[in-house]
Length: 336
Image (cartoon, rainbow, N blue to C red; front, side, top):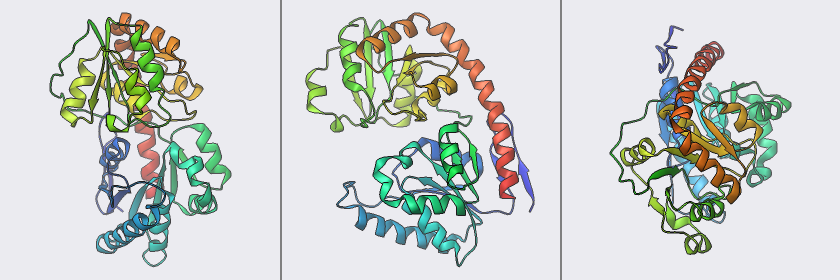
């Protein structure tokens, strides 16, 4: 196989004779988008039905399985990367590979190891062993998947270039962007409580506010703006214009994609004080407890030291570029 690897800072892998697909059963995933680009893979983020409740899942997954099988039959790829969750996607690709051999690579997100997927855990273990490679985001998940008998590599981030974006109107003397999807692990009530005690700082909470709880909306002070879901140009304009970026989680061992965006934008970051996040974001970052008091103190520190933290982020970028060079060479060795 003739393979050329561009392992420069933002380079992507370019495979001359392999056809690669990257599949996800989600409407969007920044990690999958960037990883597919770097791996020289065609990205297909398949979607069926807007309802995501457990009641609709069997019907939705059946339709997505048919769509995936049809895509694989038409494409006949050599390598298929799949986003996990849901594990059902990896199972469909593995079944297809029984008649049409291919290399299966599973990119495990933290949610794949959550309680929601306990019912399919035996299949997850089996698929991890059958996969050519399992990509995980930290040593904790690496130990788990290797315990299942799977071959693993850690890849928590990739060099990323984001658009300049449209200037976003800022209202405060200091401004922070809170990256949110209104997921259950985001301590947003603590964020708005902290905001109420920092009237000089304006908070911009991204994501579809239709998913916000009534209690959250009821206690929101005037210096908090729910931006709604933003197109990329507006979203990155907001992040670039903010003094700091906030990306929090109450769930341990979580890779923070919003925090990764702050790294490549060179922005001061405020994230949760978990050991994994301390190790991954060891420069340019203020680590806080997921309480109103902790968030308030972290925001004040990040705003006051934003220039210094931004300079540290440039150093962290170089560390991550070198890690990507190593990871990309490992990936090509495995897939070759």
